[in-house]
Image (cartoon, rainbow, N blue to C red; front, side):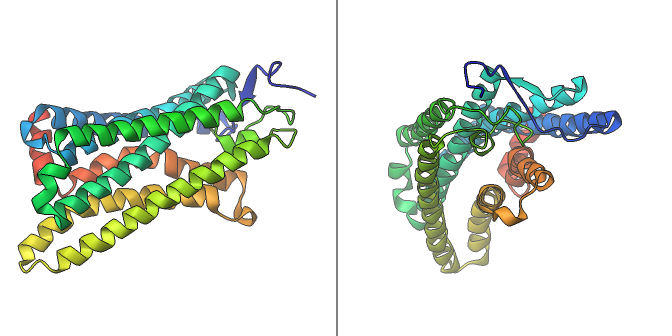
Length: 303
């Protein structure tokens, strides 16, 4: 029986064992990664450099882009390096770091999307109080709360997961280290502690989701009461990008972690993991800039 003190590395799930396909996987992930770096980097630069974008909405968007940059940088470079070197190994400490950073940035992104829903609600449903409720100090506090709560949540999960004895080998059925796959390697009922923490986290996420849904119910109710078509169009253009990002984030994450075990397989798990960990950070900048004239103008200046 092995234990955590003797475990030096984990073996990640490989996309393929064929050398040509490994190089193709490396090239594909490299293209996606560079696109995510470029898109999010330009968005951060545009918001930071253009004083017209120094508003709560763009401040939160800047934070979201920073989270996306970190989120995609946790898993993709390691996967690319393993494909290039024809290996599956990741060190024990590297796996723990990957779990911590993944949970931290995942939680931070979800918390920030919830805050952004509140920002849109105040802007459309309570416009006369927007300056008071969404002042610069309030925005900084909300963003800091999102980052801090995600950090503490990740710290608890990582410490708890890697304190559990592991004796079912060292093969992780995913292309990066994630908690559900590591729990499969446990050899005692100690994993139930982490399951309990995961249930609490899921309940908190469900609460955030309900808050987002209720916010948008009130937003759409208020928008439909706007008499002018131009006013309705402007209000919808402010909300639809955020709603699209939330839908992509929640739908892929929910399918990844809450789908029935009967439709689970290593190949499907791999595809779904790419959909929720790689695709959103790459397409989020495109979604937010697609119909946003102010952001497009700022991006042109940066370019």
